[in-house]
Length: 104
Figure 1 (cartoon, rainbow, N blue to C red):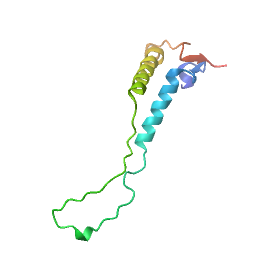
Figure 2 (spheres, helix red, strand yellow):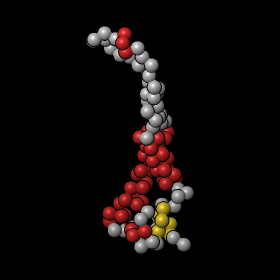
Figure 3 (cartoon, one colour):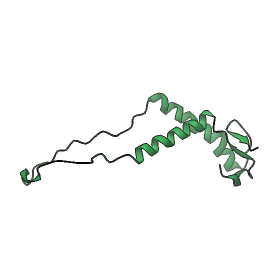
Figure 4 (cartoon, one colour):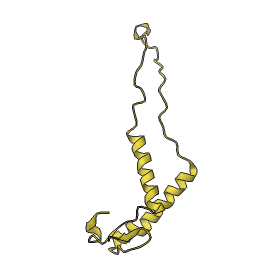
């Protein structure tokens, strides 16, 4: 959390379910967004193709899957993040709670 939000008095508790799930979500997003190219190399006799012929190549599957349980937990984390940080932030009432702890 940017220190300006709480005058350096509060920080996120990185051990909470919410922060761990949000970190997991960011990791999933990064793996999906920055994945390796589907098609790294192709060997095909292009000279054998006639005009109008279709070209068929097989690409490796690189789509991440996510289980329903994980989706539900991520949704719960997002809702708690909104409740304990975003809503108080926009109301100007950021204070210590189950998500935010004091900086020592």
